[in-house]
Image (cartoon, rainbow, N blue to C red; front, side):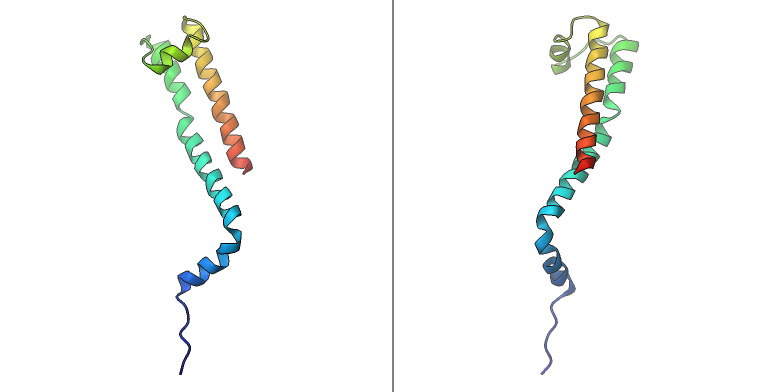
Amino acid sequence: MRAIAPPPVLSVVGLLRPHWKAMTLAMVGVAGAAATELLEPWPLKIVIDYLLHGKPLDGWMAAGSRWFGDDKLAVLNVAVVAVAAIAVAAAASSYL
């Protein structure tokens, strides 16, 4: 009688099982890096739409920019803070 070998997928899962914590941390880092890559153009959109084209701020962005003031410089400050926050998140993700 021949012994039946386990399917190859199960043997790979068995090899990775001891490293599940490191693999999970790596996946969180990759997801964070992907999210920050998607968010990078957003501050530029703020500058183009609301500073150069002169559109009024809408929704939560209007409330958030009031922390910095009520003029165009406040909108620019929001964009700068967004760039800094995205850069910090990208650095933290790549560190993982």
